[in-house]
Image (cartoon, rainbow, N blue to C red; front, side):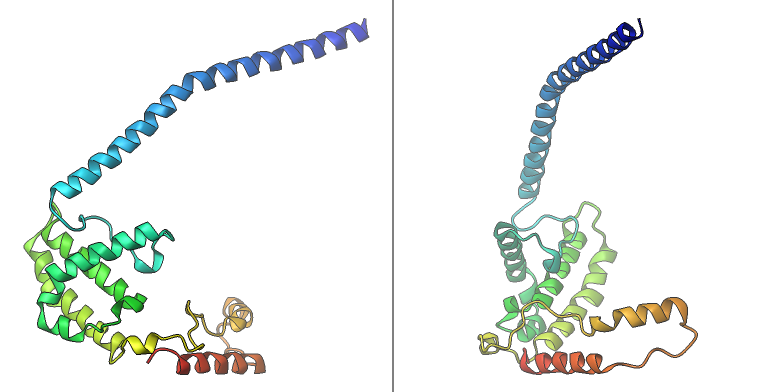
Length: 221
């Protein structure tokens, strides 16, 4: 009797699992059309958004500010961002004499300059193209934002030229955060003994600092 009872329980569990599998399959078949419809709606929304942006006029649309330093790693995205930026620079930025005078010919080779120009363009869009644009935003753009970017571009670009970007074996590509070797002792000191003096630099830290200085001295002027 006990054996028969165990078999009955096993059969009941197997039957329950099989029934649950059938229910899940039925739900999957019911949800598939809804998922496909949802994807179609999302795609339609993107098309409508694109058409609305183009209807407003040529060039980039107002919206959240992209970062050149955090741009998606897709050539189509970076190319579109630069094309929109160049369109706006011709339309607005280079109309100002100080901007045209201080923009280096090699600006595209300077990620920090592209970053400055991108956010300045979107500040202009927010001031003139956005549905919530105000005179105050335009005033801020003229009084603060544009002069500040021009001043920083002058500092960042200086007298740089295309020749400075020729490959000579001393370009490091992505920037290197200096002295990460010291993170362990510094983090431990700050967590447990910040009321005391910081730990002294060690030989490896001096060596790492010297490497950073050599790279900086051989890079862009």
